[in-house]
Image (cartoon, rainbow, N blue to C red; front, side):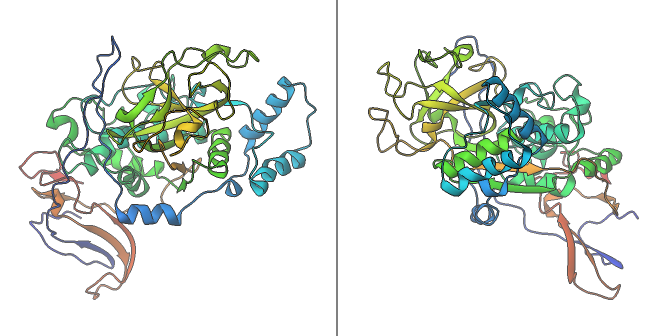
Length: 448
């Protein structure tokens, strides 16, 4: 069917509701430029907006604990490899599963988790790229890194070397959630887009990162790409909370051991990096390969709201929090974080952050403290996708309208005579994209 509607409402046996709404209010901007290392010429845009009350309620209702995370095949392989490297005997699978479950029952560290995991080394993880001058950090972390890695892992793609036909475009999500302006979004909004619509590939909708309307305003007009995007819808999404406590830390490490990457919300311009980077623990050589790499040892303040991606952890790394040249209890261990500021930032686009930096109060005597200290991030977002998915039914709708933010599309089941949708199945395109046409301009163009 084709509809060319200024603003109206339509009901069919499969009821489609389309009506005008008030344009959204201006949410302002919350992104800026942080200090750069010498030689780093990439823009340091951020763009993360505070979560809404509804998003905080969602996180509370969708908590994922260590007890909820079962080891998959990759985790069991990693555990066995770790035991072999230590010269320890290999238990039966049932014993491994019991050992995995045991720690969270007693709130103790997991003895069988590998000492270190780095999922950025897997073929599923795409190369580091830059969000450029756009406030698109939430879309970059959730779409380019998180969705790409998760789909690639499930479908055995080589996203690292296979090119942009195996990587998802943050332009797809960012241009839905930014009201047609170069402004940020909450961490949740891009995920909501991918749950409803799936996602287009970078090759289908290339991302540039330049601060021009052609970068942040158009929607993809290729109907075939929209249909193909549905195959990549997020199946499940959950939050791992309480990362400043042992059970939360354990759950995050278990998810990483399973091969997952996760996104976090932080204030990156308030991260404080340890002078000289990671220290060399003289008690062993497990940390030698990373000595001198940049590491955040605490967060001072709340500037530069930013979304990033956790890709791994390493229990052997020494972060000399109090800088006394002694390995104190609580100074070992850090998470590896992927950023969207290009490869010239910190450790080729990555950084470490001490486990202790996730705490409002340090466990280490003499570590940085003060009223402006805060845990760098409190929770992490986890997603899953099916290895193979095609929708059972699709609906195709053609529109032509100069202001896409006046549209609300809802699909439900009802009778042809119904005046309201009483059994909604699907709601999308809710006052999205700002007061612009579908191509980002001001003149209506056809859109299917």
